Image (cartoon, rainbow, N blue to C red):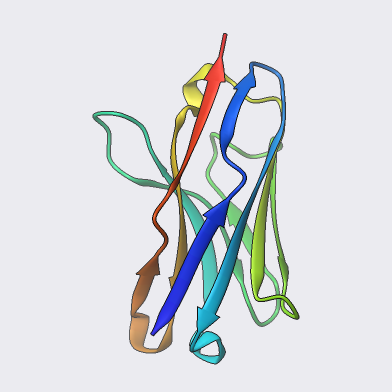
Length: 117
């Protein structure tokens, strides 16, 4: 089992920045990739960014390309999401996700990001 704990959400004005953190614990050796998803009210949960824990390759949703960076600190079993130039439409609950062996997915409890106009 893998446990994920997010932090760093909050209220920010449009154009501002936030850095989200996700600390993993438990069977971290089984994690192959970690990601951030977000879910706005009344909408589906969608991928924001993903990073492979091995080679460190990344991919981003088109809506966030150029405005966010996902990174990892393997020594701390922590993944970060730096978000810049935030827009009101980025308002959502952001969830940390980990993909383990055999495609097993783990989720954090979510952290609220609110961007005011």
